[in-house]
Image (tube, rainbow, N blue to C red):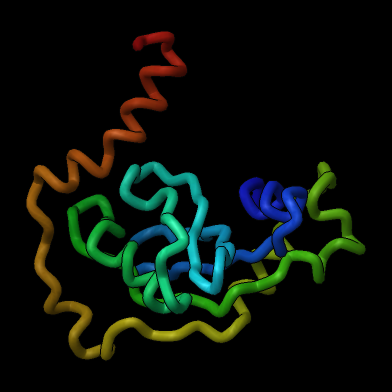
Length: 153
């Protein structure tokens, strides 16, 4: 939400895309377009789910750039669905950018929008667990933030 607000203040549309996961938390990315190509800004406990350069021709292509790195705790690739871009300006009348109130109405709206499957459902359980090294590398952001909070370099 913060990234989308920043995009809005910089003259872009405040667009978000919801990423749904299997046996994992969903994730929301703020998306933007440069010269007809999609990029994204996000914050995650997995370093591999953060920024994407605007080099993707479609939202699906952008979302697929997250696929191999969207991992649940046991190390399974868990990304399964995504929404179309949602323009948060539709909530401007509710003061979403500056409100101190709960913004769960936005989450409810996003949850009820159409989502597109990335896989045929029957293939989802057949995905392999990732190598432990990739899972550890993905969690570096979480460790880095925890150390920063404790004052450790």
